[in-house]
Image (tube, rainbow, N blue to C red):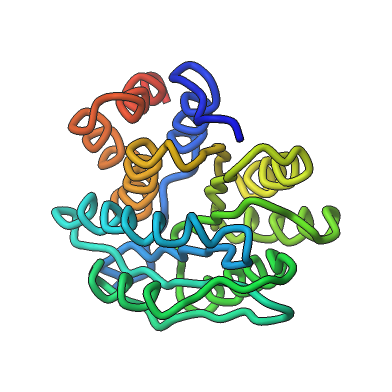
Length: 233
């Protein structure tokens, strides 16, 4: 399993893509940014599930001073099981939700995630979709079509790919590209970087590019590349 690439590689590309993503539009009366956090909960990701639960708090911490974040957990597992949570506004609530989920063998259901995200943003604006997974076992043309619909709706997908499967890498890259989002690979040794990158996406969802640049300056490291990537945009 490959490690998260060093700055100048996939991380730099990811941060540049985030910076180039159109600034989120908030609906009238919408105070918080809204983000769907979608996870593959099939058996192959069981070791990473608790890992994801531990780092998710960064998304809320990063946006607290900006008016906060509303987040919905979505996951798939087993054979045909796809669930979404209520919208929550704090990390403790999300941690409780994630703690109730156990991974189960099955096939990916990314199409259901993309359809749900489209339906949700049509009824009440969603600013970003985070998709975390390690495999793609679905028709790539269909996924591309659904991702393109999200692009038209102005809902970017920020795709985090665990592992080195080339089919999944290609699919996640296309989903990100067609939705006008961004793609980045990671592995279990990338906890610190993944935490900060999730915080960057959440900050973008709430406050747009300016807030993202401020976050990058505070965090430093790979995320600081955001400040440079946004120069001249």
